[in-house]
Image (cartoon, rainbow over all chains, first blue to last red; front, side):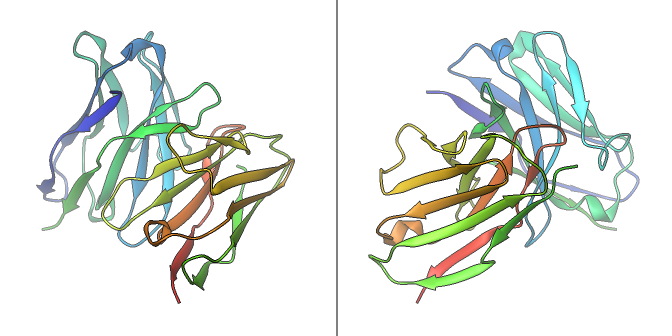
Length: 118
Length: 107
């Protein structure tokens, strides 16, 4: 079974750093891009960016460029999303998703809730 | 960026109803259009990809059509498990963008 399993919920203070993870299994991890998608409380879906695990090439939405970093460790089939300095407005659920050949997203990870509060 | 709109933003329907949701792109995206639904507290799930291809395991009551800028998702006979929020997504160019969602609830 193709599966993406994300790390657990996080509670952080403004200014703190954070890295969340997304581990793929059941398929060749380096053969498919991984995207990250944000969902703020009660809101819709926003594509943040993606990474090609085979060569670590990344592409970001202009809305998120410079605010987050996407990386990968292909030796453990894991993609990461990280922040160097969190803001309260980063409070959201973050999903990773595997991209199909024309960039549809399937499957999705279960989501990681990030809460940033002083 | 390509902007995606959906209509309606919400609808109330009964089990057995035929439901149609429309998605429009701000420019032509060929058939690079995908549909998802999301139930409360769950991750989105792919229903239809490249406008009209049914994802494996998705019931055949779901269908998609369209090309260019206008697309539709149809549920031929709404079932209790279909009450959810539906999103379209363009995968024609980055940044990939989603529609604002259509919430389908019980009449």
